[in-house]
Image (cartoon, rainbow, N blue to C red; front, top):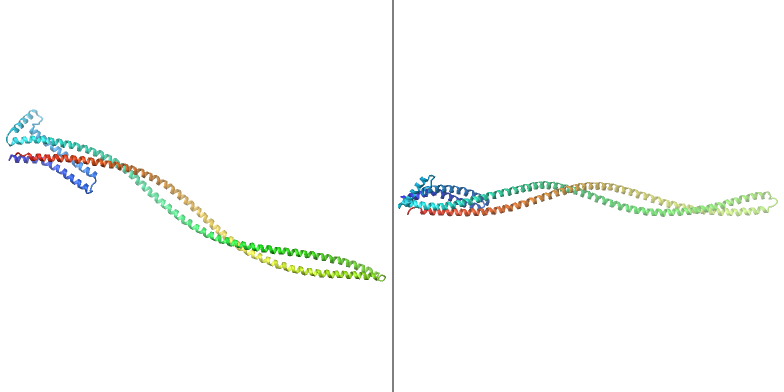
Length: 434
């Protein structure tokens, strides 16, 4: 009966401790399973295990310490009053010297206290180590918090720069679209210039042909004028010959007048000297012959002049026709140059439009260049922020490595505590009196 009571007493005393230690083990197994299945991260697992372990170890330490104080009080007579302590010690010694079940239980209790003292010392050491690990975790968490804050700031900087880059990219897209529209307008103007150039080429070819025809006409006019000049020279020569004949006729007339005068004189003397009339008559006949010959010569010259005049008329008609044709060609050339002037005006307008569009293109190009510089600056800032983020991620990686090391320490301490629990269970098994 005493053995059963002792066993029940020890069982009731150690049951809460075993329950708490079992909770720790089950909690660690549960967290490890969640970490293995990817439900939680390593950092969260370490935090959960550390927090629960510290709390439960604190409770276990407090419970064991309370039991140990009670056992010490009973077995060693530990009290604040020295006389009472002496009495309790003597009483405990007498109880341990007894040979019955009570003495055996007291001796067993004394031995168990020594063992529990060792277990409690190990638990205390493990708890202190857990506290050190907890402090390390706090430092690690502070470092992680600082790194995460810097990383968050860098991420915000990257995000802000990304938003700005997106806005500038949209603005650049609008400018590029505007450049595309301007290029389309320039292409249309270039097409118009090409069409005008084709028309100008056609007009130039037509003008060239007309100028060639005008040159031919001018050559013909030159030849006709040369012919007219030759005919005029011939007419002048004929006129000079007529002048010569006229002079001869004038001389004949003068001589005839003189002969007539002489004949008059001789007529006055006719009665006396008839021979003189014969001489005068002969002279008049000779002069008459000369007059006839001169007249025939004049008639021939007049006929020649008429023929030459007709040739001059024909040449003049040809010149008139050439001049008319030349006037027509000049009118056609005028029309062509009028078209050329119109085309030149269109070309000028197109060139002005192209100049304006090129100026707009230059403005857009300058804006794009400015925004490109801004994008380069933002890209440099993003690269710097990314470098900072990478460095802090490396620090986080190092911190995670420290967390893993701390987790291994926690696991080692847990193994030690489990060993102490098994040792306590073994002690519990040998407590009942045989």
